[in-house]
Length: 102
Image 1 (cartoon, one colour):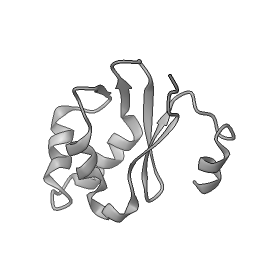
Image 2: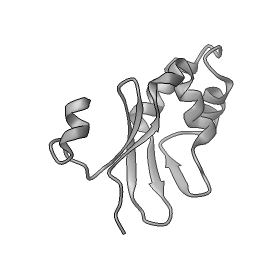
Image 3: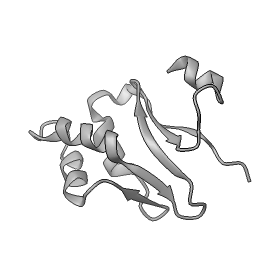
Image 4: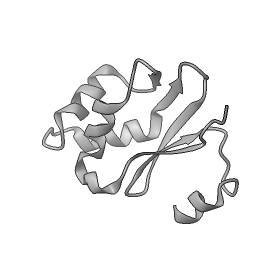
């Protein structure tokens, strides 16, 4: 079984709605979200009109760890326009295509 090290979660076409999509589309039946509180997800689900949306998103980007229940694989978030899930074991240079594009 090959584990993905870099996963495109959402492309930049979603713009200001990327944080909202993350909160709404993360499959919590298949993974655990660590470092993020329920009230933070609720704020993100409200969308960019919520007064704390961007502050909460900054905290989520810094602290979120997504753990796949079936494999234990852990990802952090990386946004460069697109929103990526990066395996914690991924090292710059290992996947040249991704890191050169980032």
